[in-house]
Length: 428
Ligand SMILES: [Fe+2]
Image (cartoon, rainbow, N blue to C red; front, side):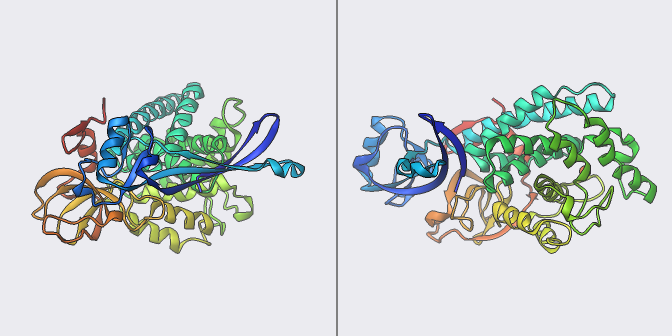
């Protein structure tokens, strides 16, 4: 399920439910603009560079027809249900083909949005630090763009939440919380306008930290009890800063004030319990905790995604909303995009994405050979059971954070992806 929207067509109101499906097609039915995700022959025996490509023209179609009899394409099926009970005869189903771009280009575009959003956050936070007026307009435009990107490619945006720089923690953490919240909201079938509101909540949740003295905010070590008390005040500071403003979604004030409250009343600043916590607060608390736990700080290394998910799970029901945690864990999966994956043969790759229904078989860019030496970068899709040079099927052995095997994922992605001669810089 991708989600549901309400729309009006010919004066009639409909609820449109969308589902993404993989459809088997005879190659005679192919048309330009379709995105082929699977062939009826092994990829290695085809002339196609990417496992998943767009049919751009007649020549592409003829090439596929030369090699295959059937292929699989992604489609979105829409169920149009009239909201007026008496007009059920107007109910209809439509099928649209999904035209996807390749992952490298999507990452490049997603990265542009990410960097622009980060810049906006820095400006907003700098104004807040100086006690100047906040200009919310640009931030809203950025969040809208982030929502569109999450809807069109959830994986590319998730990928970017892994690119962390210790010195930019506050800005990156805010963008990451916003993106993770939007992605989770999308998973929970929230409508796009709700995702935009949720994105603003994520972006602004820690703005109160700009009123916390720098020596406490950036202290490289454990805080004393008094310092912690001051740090905890970022929630009430945020409320004072944002309250009464007409240009910001009112829910963002509530989330900034309550994102450290816990279901059992053990949180701060007020120790309120579950009856007073909104869905947006519950979402932001979970993704905030996850991003904080998996980030490296000056005084401690971040934990792995799996460890962080275990902690969320352990505290589901007491601190965190159990339904939200469950959905979040299902979304991130065991193979989170942007992490390193070592195969049983010793080769190492970066996890790109896991397609719907294939959470245990992600797509991976292979980068190191079994001796941990660079190898020509190529994308493999574990869902299609690819084999290594020795004819042995690739099998995941373990997930590692960036920094292992001498691979820094951020350097790597900022340098540009090179896949079989195709080069896309993430900065162009
Ligand atoms: Fe916070």
